[in-house]
Length: 624
Image 1 (cartoon, helix red, strand yellow):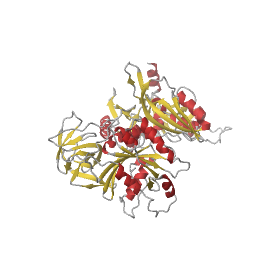
Image 2 (image 1 turned 180 degrees about the vertical axis):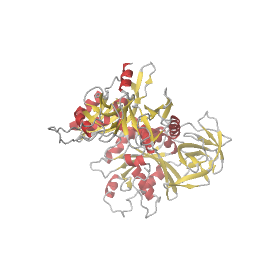
Image 3 (image 1 turned 180 degrees about the horizontal axis):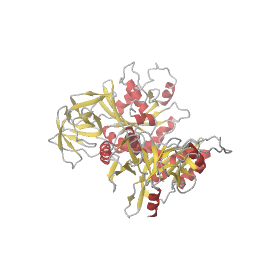
Image 4 (image 1 turned 135 degrees about the vertical axis):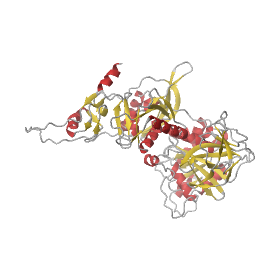
């Protein structure tokens, strides 16, 4: 763990670099909204959307932060650089690299839910980086919350994570980011919930003052040679690649020659700074010079990558690389080879797909990709199904078509040659009436119960479970609990292989021919299983159109028309009632498929198909 910088180090008094960390949906982005508004980032009559930092389309649709983003506010003579970080462990790569830019963190904890799995994840990263922690107990306006107990729980968690003594002495503020106030005194904060907006303490001034007093300013090495580490990348069609990072030593000027070094053993290559910007509110402002402690945006460096160091050409001394946790899930990305290719989007060639994955790997440091024995298929690894599904969804929005293989865990070998697999910490909050069913389901997935705690009408259950046991688990939990179970997961580490886990038992209903779905054919087969298609939908041989009610696959003809005759039958006027199809989200489809199936992704559709479309091919490969 990093040690606290020496107390006599020279620090800048006019700058604070902070990151906001929390579990998913504990209010990070909403608090940033309040800091920006009360820090003067918007003019008085400007209309500002909620969660303004979640500017990505997927972030707004999913309601989570995916990409770490920077902004800055001016509080009197103090400049506060803020980094909004994701709370989901699948996007931990974003958290790990941007924390290198900060000197302290605001740890947001929901006053009702308390510390949750991703709280543990982001807090561990902050402590490992030697950062000062300010505890922000948020949402004290929630009914039934217990804000007084949160500080003790966070203290216990920090002790468990190995925090230093100076980190355990953390200040606390209470309030509501949604209402827009924080206060260090809990009774006064409770009074402010009902206070009028004109109350002089119903704002975030107390939080700004604690940031000034408790978060240390950045260490100054003004006379040392330049060292600026790139923690994020952006792109602009006019100036190309832009490096975002913090200056750890020296100064940097627009037009200055620099050396870009990748790690301590990297070979320096020369470059020149084109423009220099710093953050101002949600935007950027051009500056001619910046010095140690500033977070800046540098343009004109086409060869720079994340974790690279910009140095003085005469002193090419790179900073230590940013450590990133290894991926735990992999799946295949391939060129779309289905019969409907090109009808709904732009089919990617293998070179196009490779180039796109290379660009993504430069920015998304937690993602890896490699070649396979098939030239048009690549193996892509990430931190979880959600992590990779965000990339797939982005490719869809770029009008690309591709086909994705089922997720598989990345196994390792122990010191004695034993097989190790990734293990997750799964926390389930479920009504007590459903707890026994949930426990049976989890234990059937090779989970081990570690904590069982009654919290009112709910049971708090904690398990360690293999990562492969989580595939398809969320929907089963919701079904068994009538939609009331809440599941949160966190990577726990690698452990011994826990044995086979039964996945999907039922077989698939597979189309045996092309054409379109006919209502008459669909109606006649409805009692054979659950269908994923509706009348008029295009078909092709090998398309998975439903789930069989029994084991084993069943091949059907959904394009079969009703024979027309001039003889009336007793049921001739019988109404055809079609049950609505089952719809999959992208994550649900990826978790649903078996090893012999693929998810075909286009801008308009998500289909499930067999790897081998022909029934004869499937029989041949199954035999041998």
